[in-house]
Length: 112
Image 1 (tube, rainbow, N blue to C red):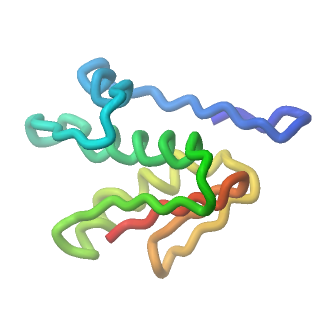
Image 2 (tube, one colour):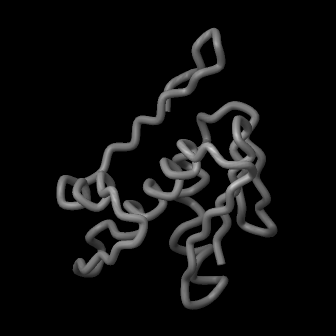
């Protein structure tokens, strides 16, 4: 993430593993990822959610990362979501409810 320009524009610089580039650059809305343990599936999914949320033109869109349990979502994905959005100025985060809201389009990404 870089610092905002004079006009408030922020450039997302998410660097994914090359194996996940087809997933991140897909045109389809739905997809499935089959990869071994510790391959980077969660990181790629969080990157995808942030990018799709940031690019969405609709009114207050909602995005979600769903894990088997709430504690698993917090344990495996919350740190990545906070880290990858930390450079966005005026972002709103809820530690207790595990969501972030992007300032420019009010897109919310929540962990369930």
